[in-house]
Length: 109
Image (cartoon, rainbow, N blue to C red):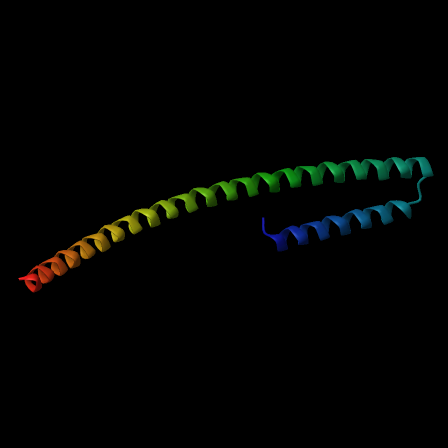
């Protein structure tokens, strides 16, 4: 879940809770009945938010785990690629060193 959709969801839930609370307060029921309805609605909202937060946490965990695996694979590929390049560089340096030794040997004669 992205940050923008999470903020939108939170704003919608907050608006719905406020709207429901105002609607209940202006309802023509007795005070005890109204308080029970408010309490019930608050519990439902709490349960809904808990469920949504749990779901978001699971989704973030899955995404983080997938990104971790992807990163580890890319890192392994990069290290492997660098190893081949290092071997090529070492071979080129060894060839240059051999050429320099030959030139030095010719100059020593």
